[in-house]
Image (tube, rainbow, N blue to C red):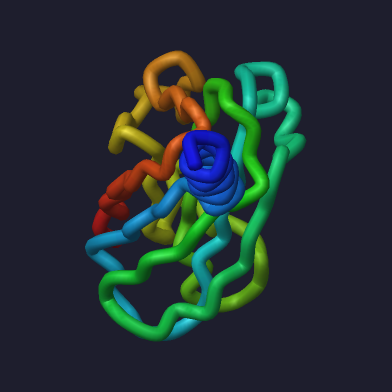
Length: 138
């Protein structure tokens, strides 16, 4: 009987680890049109070179959206999101290079000259977590 209980507990723990994920809630979406362009980075080098570990393109359907990032090992990550209002798959900027489309980063950190992996990183330990990212206004 003890073996059956131990097996059931271990099976439950294994199953829970398979279903673990990063849940991201995006808030302050101004226009219900276009796409959310999501990039996940594992380090500053990937961020600087714009080499995404994972990327998603999500059709905007409401002023708040939630999505899941799965199949991720434990480690440090950063998420960058921009609202591609005109659906051209690029972040629009003004003459000075300042974004004119809403954007946000994990931990809601805004760098003076762009995002910083160190300030925006979070630690994922293999258990389900929920992050909230608030997009900048237009």
